[in-house]
Picture 1 (cartoon, rainbow, N blue to C red):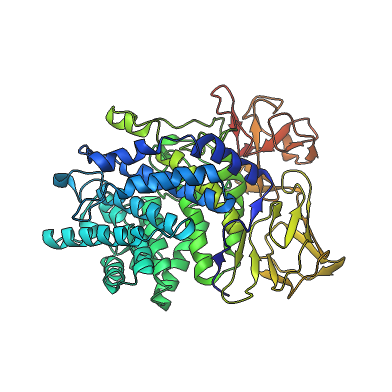
Picture 2 (picture 1 turned 30 degrees about the vertical axis):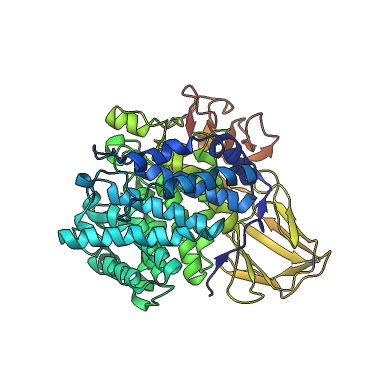
Length: 570
């Protein structure tokens, strides 16, 4: 196993459905936002009501920066440069960058908002422009926080929401400030956060090592908690620790086994789907009192972040098997046709008729003070889309390090094109080398990979591992990859979810042929791919005439009069 890293910006251009939606996200959402509105709370520091307006700049700008990184979009780059300058101008002489007034700082979501400001600034520095002001500003901001805690004799876990998880989730940002500055005090601060356990209830890392399930760690708040474990993974780049490694891997395994839905989304228990709660088990329960809402987009996107950190930590070949469905279902299926709106719940229930609901103005709903239509999941969604190109193809460490293929969609790179319409139409992709490649290419053998051929010669494959196809490649060489796209059934009692490769198939009242929710008589699953109906990416028809579509296309217009369903009675 080897550490994996992102390829330099512009090296991977996805040209399939993910790539198309990423372009829509840039044009229709990221290039149209009022970035000045997002910075306004930091200029005025008017958040005295316990709100979280401070998160929206960092969340939105993070996804926009990554989108710009992978596409090189010049219009977006200009908007981001102006907004970063605007944010830097909010820093006061004491080093503070906060949306909270002085008397309210360290309470509510203050540190949470500061975290996202740091993340946004550092991502801009790392990916787009190494503005020398940014490391200085981030160091001063973090020094201000450390001094505040010292003066008040507080630990991070004593501050903010969710028994300390929200504030302690700044851990990863602290590690990144250390990376930029190499100032040991920041590394020491990161270790202090880890040793605090990140929760007032108990030490979440020690509990995870014991096998305590995610829903019983801290107060169970999913993406704040996962961000703490993400930070612990990041810290190991500078302080390798076998025990910490075991902690982050055990947490990864528990989330993948106990919390992911068939669609690759996660989050349940409260009304907006923001907690762990044995989601893998609860996804087939239609009682909202039991399940709460399902599938907060923030949780799902943070799951992609966590998978990324595990690949960066150790390159475990099993990891892509757990985010493939997330990519093609929860992420593509979390936005509308225009990539402007993103669901907060994705959706609820999964085993009964439902529809996808556009997000509300979160601050307006909670405080009666609208904030330009912003919602945490609407802010996170574009980040999820932009993560997919960098996860799809990564590189190892060192000169001429191998490239690792983790996700299969048609793409263009400096050395080859991967062509084909899999997974939405067809069962094959072809890699054609357009330039001599002097390092190896390793393909992740995901569960749906059926065969790999190099220049017509079939190669042995083993699922969940990387296949090194060759050490070097010449112009004109071809790799043929075939996939198993036969419709398969995943059963839970008398319920079944149907899949084709990584795609989850769903009922949609616009094409299903009968009332959504009616049982599949006799559990006949003799589905054949048919020409997709307008507005759908792929369609399969059963021998009884019923048509299922891919989950990503199901209710992709976010219409309340459309019904969809993922788990089917039979």
